[in-house]
Image (cartoon, rainbow, N blue to C red; front, side, top):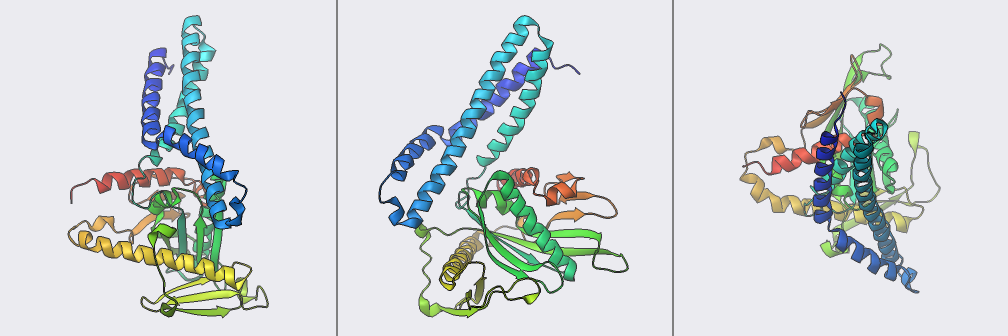
Length: 373
């Protein structure tokens, strides 16, 4: 069906309205002002004397440059599409009209994706994310599934150019992993990935079953906000026990010959954190403390919310329930059990194409939060 000029004008007006709303919510002028201030800070002679601050400045500057560029490019594309449509209408040029129709479809997708950011307004949504994946019920298949999920999230981050750091990987004996913890070091990673938290379920013909039977396995995903200094999560030395051991890889093989891996036990809560992927014991201890702080922050958040949660009878909001099902046999489908969003291409999902699931989850959460208790 041929799209009329009137239809295209209506769609462009709608896209323009949405983009203006996004620009207003994200406060483009404020972003530009902060970018200018950070560009000045980045040129200070003594910036790298404090490496942690220098990394914060350069990381934030890079993020702002990307955000501003994305917004400005979309604005230019919307304006260019409007001009091209006027020319196509004036000259009755069908080829130009078709070109505008294709660009409008692409603009709608790009603006919708950007609009998702405006829905991330929670207290910790702007933070970087700390993600832990744990194998659940299902034996070796569950361990293999956990490793598939780890790769899925790392590939998702790679597709977007988001830096990641794997803090700890506990390998299973036969295949896969028992657990892994990694950070996604980009603003709003927590708000974006927090909708991935919960129990994931895989149904397939087990590659580890010599009788070729169908197997159901589970893995849990935990997403926490990375702790910042302003959170003031103080951990007294007398409240932790630090154990050191040798790092191990797949099959239990030793990764190095020194006791560089670190395990920290928080005595008051019993929380245990390990880190073995850094080169030195000191680095591993620092990384483990950051993970412990994040877990203690989450514990504090849960305690603060417990009183409110006790007043609600909304059991559907439990993130511990199954939230996504991956079926590879007898048919191919990945389905989010909260939003009902689904795809028949599991291979693409496991290769990191999960943006549509995340967007649907964020919209679902936003609507769910505004339902009356």
